[in-house]
Image (cartoon, rainbow, N blue to C red; front, side, top):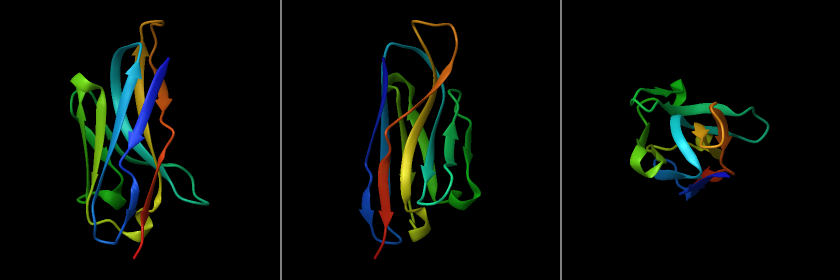
Length: 121
């Protein structure tokens, strides 16, 4: 069984910062890509930031220069540092990991339960 558990969400004022964390646990053989998505009310889920095991990163244009993704491969953890937050960043943020378990030879995508980020004065 694989679990992705996010933490670090909350209410923050515009211009503030938050750091999200996501710990992946379970019978994990290997983790490839890890990332963060978000879904605002009435909108589709969108990619925020992604990181490969080798360290390559990708960001949505709307967060470039403000958000930073990092990961600790030894701890199976991915982080999202969010600075200069805007009201339009308000959404549920989901952790995502492409991983291989000991029970099968193929990589599959797993999701966390989500953590709410609200940016408001």
